Amino acid sequence: MNQEKILKILLAPIVSEKTTMLSAHNQYAFKVRVDCSKREIKAAVEMLFSVNVENVTTSIVKGKKKIFKGRIGSRPNWKKAMVKVSEGQMIDVSRT
Image (cartoon, rainbow, N blue to C red; front, top):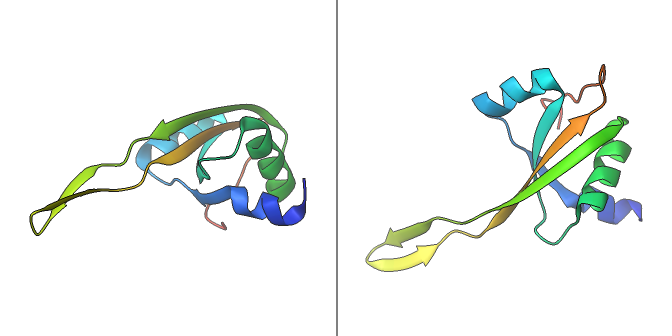
């Protein structure tokens, strides 16, 4: 996998109260491209953050329906990846 594709897989870390609590258990959440696989996500996290990934869990988050000036629209669907790293390793999401 080339470097350019790896840099485009991870879009942003998900920082919330729930994901902050999960970081104590070596789990981190990222917003990723919808068309990428678990293997690609694992390779991207390992290369960008220099950690060993144990497990990757993904889910598709459906976009909300919105009404603006009487017209019905929807926000786009997006993919969430929960990444578990090896014991003793951590990812500093404040730097990303």
